[in-house]
Length: 569
Image (cartoon, rainbow, N blue to C red; front, top):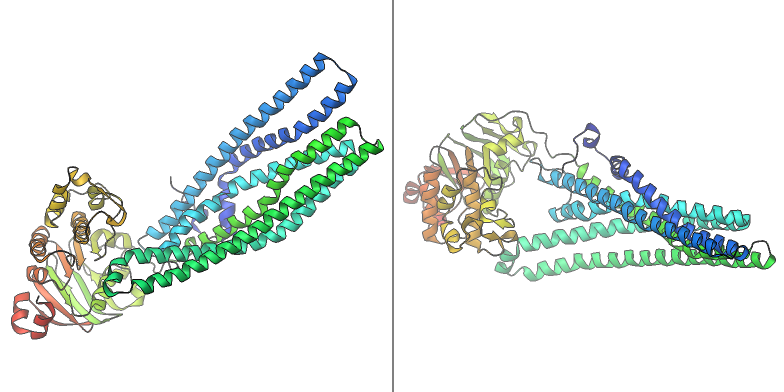
């Protein structure tokens, strides 16, 4: 399901505007839900009223006919209550679920757009917003009809009691207003506390995601204890805030229950006193006592609604952080020409200092970085993860500057495959060819030497892969990521350390296979692997942020002692 791309839904919106949009999109469902839930509450309230009338008339006309009519009336009321609740909640919950899905898709779409958004949130926080906050925002679809239906019950009860005695009706109205006034003040504290809790839980979730991603290297250099200590601190903050929210919610619920009980008791005692005075009849007393008990439920629901409204508002405000965030850059409308070359012209960013080189169309070039930071910065610039205004110089594809090209078109034309490519839950095939449109899957599997993994399982390419490739080794995950990049078959392919987790023999075979498969198309490999360096047409040495040497791998080994020490194994 997709969200309609109307101009109204595309402009930036605060949290209140998000809630208004959710309400406006579900007016029909909410109207039907309100009618049915109002009918349910009216039926619930009518039950003690009917009992009072039955007692009143039975005392005057004691006959089997009157008893039969009374039983039939109660049966109609019970049937109305049952059916209206069933269908009313079905309509509202369907609308709630659908609206939550719409906002999940919209928030996830912002995170998956080719152009990143300028938002100070980690992926784990965005995930929390796209799930919990989207669900809690959509709860407003149920809150409003339930609020209205509860109001219907209170009004019906007040009118019925007012007809018996005006003082009883006024007591219900004044008591309800007083209860809501007290609880509305308390609900503001719940909203602010919940918003802070959601933020802290999201930060803890982001920390977990970072730990899972970096668990292997953390173990490698002994940093796991410090990382876990850091997570424990963030998690403890989230726990403390959750306890604070639970305490506030407990006080709120307890206060609401106590006030509702006081009002019900006041109605019952007042009705008993009026009956003792002779101001109301026995039937009206039965009705009043019954209403005092039945009104507890709608009053409880009515008093809880402000809390849910504040929670929905807090969640909507957090969603607005993502939806309102501007893009980090505004891409141009151009498209690169097919084939074409790749050029960096005096690029300065991070560890890069005036990097200048050109890769001709169809050439296979390797970049040998002496500093890992420079390799990461070069890959980030080429992947368009760094906005053009944040680095000096220019990156050109087919003679056109990157800033003038559409980001989607650049991604279609040039693929930059990171060294830590994500593996998704699914199968080998869906990881290699997510769109199901590649014609190079078999060739990519062979070139990446993933054939042994495919042959190892009877399912072949349909072998199930767990989230993050948990059932694959590090080398298998890396080869699977390489196979995905090769299967994309883009005009320009940039690979960043694609073979660091495989053995030397497999690395040698992969280097030859990649060079053969990519023959005639532009390929850049950022690596220190001797096998890949030897397979390249030429090697660019990247030292201290600049290109300091350029030649074939073997010539550089023979003439450049520093290069030999850096890449020889």
